[in-house]
Amino acid sequence: MGESDASAEWVRVGERIRVAREAAKLSVRELARRVEVSSSHVSQVERGLASFSVRALYNVVSVLGISMDSLFEDVPSVAGSPAASTAADPAPPTPDGPLDDGGIVLRRAARPTIALTGGTRWERLTPKPEVNAEFIEVVYPPNPQAVPPPKDYIRHSSREYGIVVQGSLTVQVGFDQTVLHAGDSIAFDSHIPHRFWNATAEEVRAIWFIRDDPRGGGESNHAHD
Amino acid sequence: MGESDASAEWVRVGERIRVAREAAKLSVRELARRVEVSSSHVSQVERGLASFSVRALYNVVSVLGISMDSLFEDVPSVAGSPAASTAADPAPPTPDGPLDDGGIVLRRAARPTIALTGGTRWERLTPKPEVNAEFIEVVYPPNPQAVPPPKDYIRHSSREYGIVVQGSLTVQVGFDQTVLHAGDSIAFDSHIPHRFWNATAEEVRAIWFIRDDPRGGGESNHAHD
DNA sequence: CTACTCGTTCACTACCAGTGGACACAGAGA
DNA sequence: TCTCTGTGTCCACTGGTAGTGAACGAGTAG
Image (cartoon, rainbow over all chains, first blue to last red; front, side):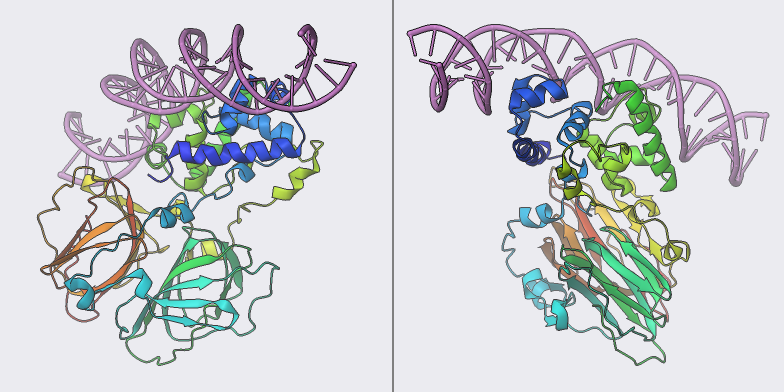
């Protein structure tokens, strides 16, 4: 699956080790001595030519006083490596076929987008507006200082389904609040007051499906920001 | 540092993995499948009889949605270098809150999964089964040799919405065929014969919402493979 | 010039991460 | 009862790779 692309992954880990080592003003040999491996091996690992065992890696973070996670950084996402997978895709043109013209398929670059205040974007995922439904990707911009969520709760009659594709989204439904990480999903009746916001320094992306109640509720007062 | 006493250290790491796995309600075999190692190896690691490679360990924390550091825990917070504090809070465990218990939120690691023939997996994204709807993530395994798609077209009455999150998925709806790349989305009435398959060497992931027609169609004969 | 340290290169190997097949046990049908 | 299917575990085996050690060229001091 996703990152088994070990080599590429190790290059980055190695680079981070080197940065940390230099910040600590240790020579390759000195680090090697403390980690209890050979200096040649340290050199190779830092340049992505080899990899550390878990034991060695554990010693490295101990000696350098850094966190294990900081070496990997782009931890779990749906794809194992979020930006990687998206970026990896050279986006081959995929010539428009009948499906594209038939109102079936919508290319990523062609999504109708609405920009909300605060930088949040709604991107429609359906070629044409749907009746009694919204299928959208919402992009929540970074919110460095843990900015307080918008004041206004939202209520409308329908049911909502969402999955966080990238980043961590803070959600509040009713009186309860939690943080959804990449891959976590949610489903709830939207007549319960709810709000979502991004309290991290990373952009958050989520896929939402909002299903309007076939009978009754006409309210369409969403505000996923 | 200290711990060069590898074995003793691994016992604890293994125990923590087991705890996390059980919390996620995954079987040894299921975790093994997702981490891409053998179940026997998982079993051995959890009991301290063997150890994971860094690659495997990385997959474990991704799959279980836990932080790397949480597996080692007694890291060096005071280990001389204040640099440690920098990378402090990568992935707060997000302790289960009321939302998790309330049937609202579903953590990634806790998704109910059905394995279809051919290696395709359906992962339900809703904490409980929905009425007249499916919100799922479908994982299509690599299909190195451009294997011909399954023979049977699918027909049922409802409407389907999908977005490709990773990889490239070949779709055929009616007589038209195209390839969806990451970010491309699709929406169509599912009474039109359709089929999807992965003709690439990379795993494909897609989010689907299948909306059963409130009136009429009872057919539930999907086959996203 | 020598003498030392720096990071690097490379051929080599021992070890262990990971496998596959088997096992015993527990439930659920039939 | 006997048969499945799923659980976790056991164990003999192997391939890859983590790790070694000796040598290299470049820098810098004395």
